[in-house]
Length: 349
Image (cartoon, rainbow, N blue to C red; front, side, top):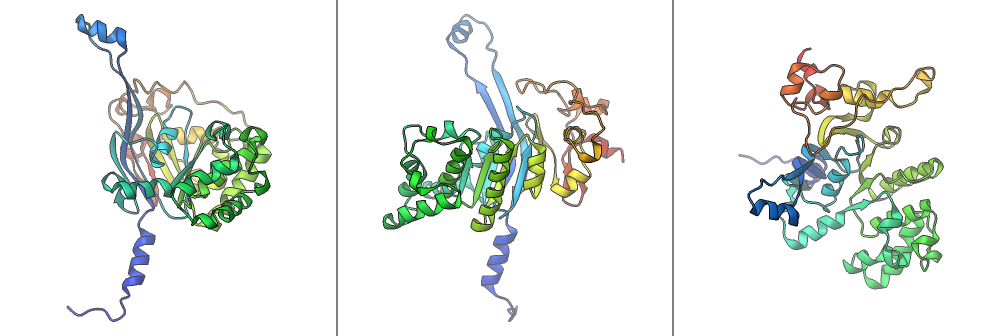
């Protein structure tokens, strides 16, 4: 076999890296089992059956995030999106399934490489006052992880932290203040600076603007987008606010009771929502085109993850539910190019 004179191994490696997702969630499941307390253990010794309570937080979830991509993860409270975000960030481990970073299963890497994985994927939490140590001055909070992992030489650390703070809109002269001395918006900027200080490739934002005023939300969202351009960041943006997700995301993943029911590009999903749950979520978003319309909440309440419904989890609340919806779980399949949904209605077309 003759070699291709035009082939360039270095170029091929760059192309492969661009095509390989930065992070893949591969059939991830997360269950939390409540351990029996003393009374239950005593009852079991006397012959009583143990009632094991298992929370099905995430159920067989799969999707990918590419470099510089913003993926919005949406759903009602209790649907498992925050748990999935914590799994992506390496805070929680999946019960089943795999997390692949740059194509490599993180469960099979060395202890040194797993430390690098945790550095490369950072998380920003909803309430920065809870996530920042109240006894640490903000300079220490922002620099601690970067200093421990020697992200930059010690002689360059002060300049590095000052640069990150400035890029996040925080005056470096305030480094000696404590978190309670800042407003909510400023504390969130400090949390962002702490994440960026270790030079991540991806940031998980868990309801990162939910606790802020609307005007401050806009500032923080614009900051996220500016930082993506500056650092080539990818984001997993976890939120229940459909309007915010539409503004910031390239793709959207919709979760319901632990399962992914739909995913696709933001433009496609908002223009042609396929799953009845997605349609109901978008139907609650105010729009100038529908300013004389009345808005209705989704019928019923989200079932308990301790005992999810059989078949399609959404069938107790779905206006289009059929017998098969109560019996069989619908597979996630393509309904258009790059657009997937899990609904038995698609089998009827």
